Length: 311
Image (tube, rainbow, N blue to C red; front, side, top):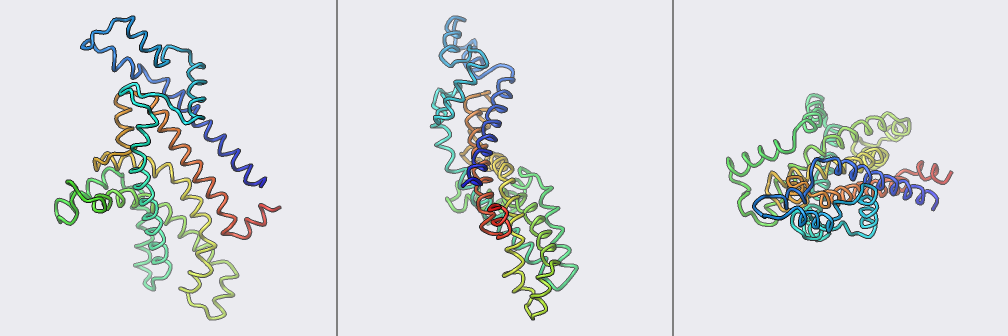
């Protein structure tokens, strides 16, 4: 329980730091959404009316006052109202989060499967030249920009081959290319860490003992090596969540999917600080929760970590 409490307290500290840093950076932006929306000459509002609107949104308060209000609201799950549309931020994010969670979840699952396939093939193939070529693939994948990969996949599988439609696709068909676009760059660091861990575990003395007893390489990999090599990969998977969320935003923009990416792009265009603050807090919370889950799951996988936690 002390281990869980310590990890939970650390997670809350990271979340508070992320909220504070995001608030200060967003406040440093020139102008704000209220000015962009209501100071247009076409609306014909007087300075007194604009001042009243700014007061209603709390934009005229001091920095500490705005921070206190924003933090109190965030703790209660209330991020205020969008200065660009007037809709509650909670409603805007709630209407878009389902699509992004589905895309990010499938992208992470596909990335893990792809990483395991690459690592297994590179470890078991009897042809050194082919195993070496597969080991070089993660370095290629990690250098591919998400937006470029999405455009290439659209050109190849939709326009050239005609296999997958990007114009009014079905629910399942519309997920194939975005998931691949998101999964390929994420799978690269997972595969690299997994390969290094597998190589390190296979060189351990206990693996030599099991091999001397007649175990095949495939049996060794499935029953002894992968479990011991999984903890570093699990840790890096939690760290990569931030990249996964960023990639989901870009992927949604490339494929014109409605989700957190579309909401973020619109909020950036109008400098809608309440919406951006809510999205940053949501992304930070997801990052913290996943890494907390990784910290709690790792001792269940590796008995050595359980002994260390108990000590």
